[in-house]
Amino acid sequence: MNDTGALLCEELICHGADLVGFADLTTLPAEVRENLPVGVCVAVVYPKEEFATRSNHDCDKALRDRLDMLVTLGAELLQCLGYQAVAKTKAQVSRTKLSHHVTLLPHKTVATLAGIGWVGKSKLLVNEQYGSMLRLSNILTDAPLKCAAPIESRCENCMACITACPANGDITKCYSTPEMICSKCIEACPYTQRYVVRQ
Image 1 (spheres, rainbow, N blue to C red):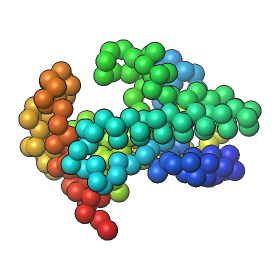
Image 2: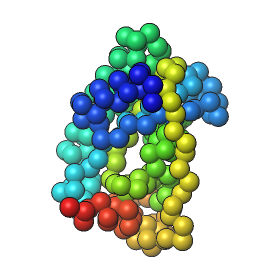
Image 3: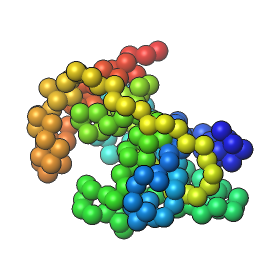
Image 4: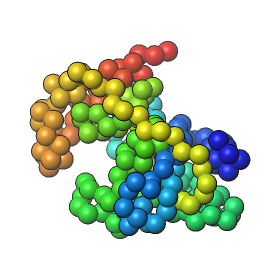
């Protein structure tokens, strides 16, 4: 990690980020990444006590607000160092959404390219340490950061999230039916379970 990357990581973690990763985005269309080659994934972890109530809107809003603060802080730091940087806050992403649940560049895409985790059968990001108990955001930049390699899926033959899903893994049905948004796929994931029971 170069000095810029180390400084950025230190600043973000000091202010409340749990995970930070750098992604090479040059394989993606230029318009999707706003003509910037690098993505900085910033992740915060849901507290274990929120495991049974992951749909807790107060907790969710607090984490989203923290992420907005973190990516804004990170982008400002990079700009002060002379680089271009775009903080992908909730408001900024909303302006470029294709639909209610579809964006040009999902945070989980940046996260997978940054080696933070992989997209599981639930279509959610899965991290080896925290399962799917993460909220994500990112920064787009031209800073010369040392990027990680993507992680391939480690779900293998596991179908726990699909088996637990009332919509049988149909993401469209899940999003369009309020009573289906239940987080059972997250709770069933073995990686999430390990995080929750870990001391």
